[in-house]
Length: 459
Image (tube, rainbow, N blue to C red):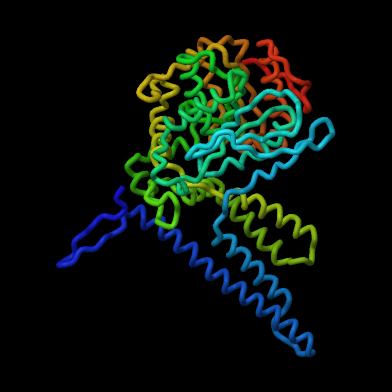
């Protein structure tokens, strides 16, 4: 792939970077420039504190106060947080509690792939629990965003997750990744885990997951998973409008390509790869709730400026920092995958209209007859609005109604359906109840659940 385009100027020729390359490089330069500002402020803070200590030692008065240095320190930390690179966070799930005992957990890569691994959270126990394939969205954040999802499932399930990689770190030699590649991964992972697998797909991941299960149902019916739980996904974006659907409808693919598709620069393993960069996706995420993020950072500055004078302030500041350490850790997406998702899922609504193809073959969700379905929505979801996920039931006309369930969590936004209080107390127990109910009807026996179950409601 040519990264540079030659351009003649007079008697000489020069190589000019295309707009995409310049945008990524400008971002990198800006980030490093802010890093220099951060160092300057940090140096000033250290000098101020040294001045105070020296003055106190010799009994000399100084116009520099401890409050001034605390404010400078807070400013230094805030500028550092803006400038720094946020790496992929750790899952950090070293143990899980089962029947009152702490059981060790270790991460095991079951299958390694170029763009994402099949990762197992292996519990050091001889329990026999339902296998769960948790399909994380490939939407700008790392799969660690589902840490709490995994945590709640671990006591009563054998949990696997799609652990997606940052596209900028995947060498060009590894090939391309588009929507069909994603479906390929899902087909292979489901077959790897076997027909007793229970797929739980979150947000964007619901579309390729349903596509993969539809394909298996028609071509390899014995490989169909036992259940699928589809949570807050754009299965039919025509069912309810959001700012996301409005953006997709009013913005042409050509404009998106020219404005946001970039080429990974030479300091990364994936140099030359076309991507939709994570930093742009982060800007889009934050623009949806701009004032909330501004208020959170103003609050963080005030808490940091209080320094060690208030232990509660330090605790509250750390809570804000922990949230944004995860939120700011973003990954680039393959350009083809991103553009095809916009075109095929949002603009053309291919699944809802029955026109979605995989490797040039029409997908037929009507082929699904074995896999039980639970859809989950949040009443306040402003990304995948209520109705977008529920709509899938009308397309599974061959699936016994006794195998179809739905739950709407009142008061929950998009992230609240897989993270937080409602997820732990209301949604996860219903998913567990659904999985075990379907297993029982198939004659599959498991150990008694180690966490509470709630019987789900049929559609």
